[in-house]
Length: 205
Image 1: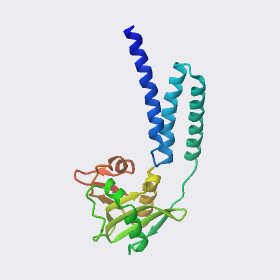
Image 2: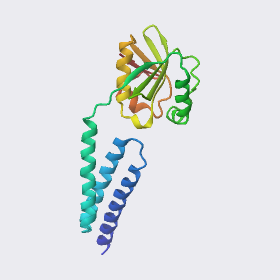
Image 3: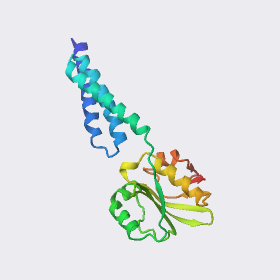
Image 4: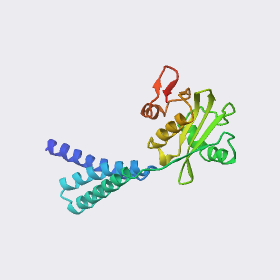
């Protein structure tokens, strides 16, 4: 009897896990992350529904899994095009974007000074005319000390970073150094090719 109760509790917990993941997925800004988490949650809930013989629920969640997979494949085959815009004067549009996303920037980069008074190089990445990324730094010869490399939440899939560093190389930059906070940034820095030098990060272009 105790074994049956434990099994029943585990099955019920499995169902709650699936439901929780489906709900959490709708809180995500990134469409890709939403569909991935929703797929995992729907898969778990499909298995749970089959176990408890709730076949309509199982069928509905199985359809959700297939729909998510279809759109994930479609998204992976869709190439996003970006434009690289030099904004060395950091004019009104640049300042507007920093002000608009200041709270998120400060959350992503704890302790950052968003005045960027020491910067002499700044860039915006645009998608179909919409600014989706900002980079600011101190340029000296062929080196760039990066003060900020920020993408808006909807575009955090590493594609902007890869595009940015390709364009910086074309601009004659051979080395990028980052000395800021890596608290929420380590995975990104590693993914785009930065090397931890102990106290700062460095990327050869």
